[in-house]
Image 1 (cartoon, rainbow, N blue to C red):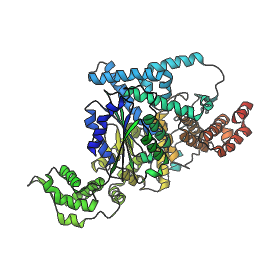
Image 2 (cartoon, rainbow, N blue to C red):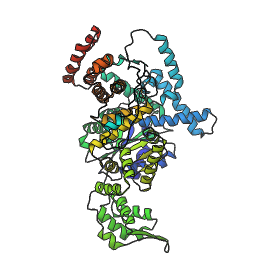
Image 3 (cartoon, rainbow, N blue to C red):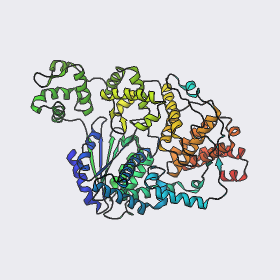
Image 4 (cartoon, rainbow, N blue to C red):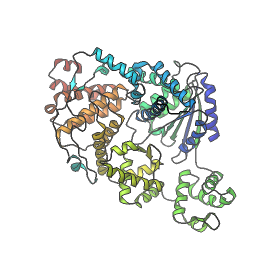
Length: 601
């Protein structure tokens, strides 16, 4: 399988001359080693000038359109910005890397132009620092063209303490939030309600997004600097991401020949693929296209030889010595790579496998191994391991699992209330890393497998999980919202808002906080429409409306009006015409301005 993957990568530069992309689709059962296989090729190709971009879709982020792709490209360009800054500061950087960075930024400005860069900055915030000169020009142009007639929504600037908000909703969690409306952007900075997107047809926004990503991928790759885009767990990918990926792979007519050089590698669970119709449609479109060379692979369990090779490598012993052990392990695990790893760990913990300092090698007790079974589900085994850890570590793992498969360390810090709690959380996570429950790198803590994340997430009742999500969202918002309301929300702010959405029916008693949160969800929905993430926009507007409550029209008439108008628009974009009248009726009955009523019609 690895040689097949390498062969597909080697063909990529040659096929790029004809605007043909290599696509490798790897199916298999859960824990079959699909991700491990792809990551095994990362180091070899990167040593030969490739760039490796990884998008890992997540069960918890399935309802956040484009968020995974957005995060991946944003991290890529953050690294570009860092390297460019080092070059400008005179720090020694590899010549090839420096040349690639300068070429890439120059081509992006050429291919995308200022409007395109500004548009994509909604999904790739690092563009704002990388192309600061572009945004300075845009700001000057906007200031020169500003006129009257802007519709503004504001929240009253009144101080209010909300120390008890999270305490009233904690439901078993010991985390408490202390914040006020000033913390989450509810000051007298007016929010410019930009309705310019209302006149755009959904397909126009989507087509522009797809076109700009085509130009972007052409700018960052070439036969001299190919890119491998790894798309992991496609069975959880949202419709918008799959449509964008299909366009990137198939719609290549506008690309310059010999320019773009990308190998697309996707993995998915075979038993869950058909549950995602958008994924089925995506694969069918790719296979029908003349612009692709598709390689299909199906991973199952390893044979005895593969199991033996894995165990021999782990124990640093010749395969002839480990074969009896491998035969027994293969019988228990059927060659499933993750099962093999878990089973070996269990044997080590029970001292069925131990290291002999006298013989300077690993030894094992075959009698104990034959008696040990793997007749339980892996999820149950992992749950047992979690429950064997201290309560504090368990609660911290549940806290981390609320973010999905991984969490950025800077976001983790923002979700902590103070340095003391941040230190405590970090200590617990280090324990989990030592026990192989978590993985750690320079930027992230991550679960090595979704079953481990699921076990940590589901160890508490759903009601308590909602409390975790709500508390996390409020705490992050307290630190994330530091811009004026006319500036875009940060990616971290969207992470916080998604946490509040996952809290479902959790409510806030204080009206000022409710209005502040409603305004943030209005802004998030507007942003989502601008990047063609229409289902996400609908979700944001719905949550915003939920915070208005029955007294929303009296508390903030303008905000209530704009949220109801936005819901009308979102229902239209999501092809939900039956839901529109409920919101138009509210606008017509409450609008003071005749033009607001006309807009609904």
